[in-house]
Image (cartoon, rainbow, N blue to C red):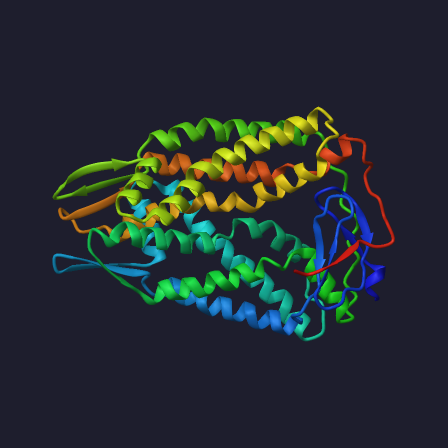
Length: 392
């Protein structure tokens, strides 16, 4: 089957195109909203299989070995990711433990095993069983796999603790860094990309029907999620996100309090990252989503491309708000020295995890094609080919 016999559907504006033949260094772009539909694939299925296997190995090492060891007054405390989950659960915040475990381990493992199943078969020159169902599930899981966010959480935790005690990095830290790089590279594998790879090696993958037109019923659901997230945003910032008990005294830290502490330690860049990810990004998502939904409901016709690009930004940055949740569970796992030092999660951590999940559900549940459809652009257009541009 030739590339031109396939359709590339733009999931941001609803346009559909005959798939063009790309040369090295080229990419296909939607004529209507400028969304990138496909890039030239340098990797073969066997190359992707090698990346997946390397990711599984590095991810296993990241979770088997301790991330770091904290040394205080001759005592040591090593902590792995699973230690952080167990301690968070025992501290009385099972909902935070479940969210962190799912985003940092369970869902990434499921995604990697699904990709392994698909690319092992493609490397052998055949289609795997349940091909369409599996690649569709890979797309659904992708936003919820947060290994790179967890790595940033580890780095922030190290900066916070380095002024309190001696910290020795563990094998798990370096393995997490490697796994994060591989996981980031695997985000290029969308269902549409995998389907194109199958066709390129001559496999009769079923041609995906064009997606159904979005329903206006999405407006009510999205508004409900936005409102719930906005309500949780208040206690997430007012309640302590963690409690620190030490021989020097007890203290409770909110999200902004943690940022101020990082500034006082001289870690301005890390403080900026935490402030942006934990304060600016959730508020930015709430405001942007509310504006996008409101304009779509009002059938606004202006700045459709800009609004689509804004939605892409909201969708991309969604998972990075989980940064503070990972920081809290790691600090809780490392800071277990009895009367000398004990760090526990606070009520703000549970509220903040709820904000992250609700805003991500709102962003992923809202279909940006609604804005184009209600502005008068009908369900699908099918030009002869998408726009081809050099890859820069």
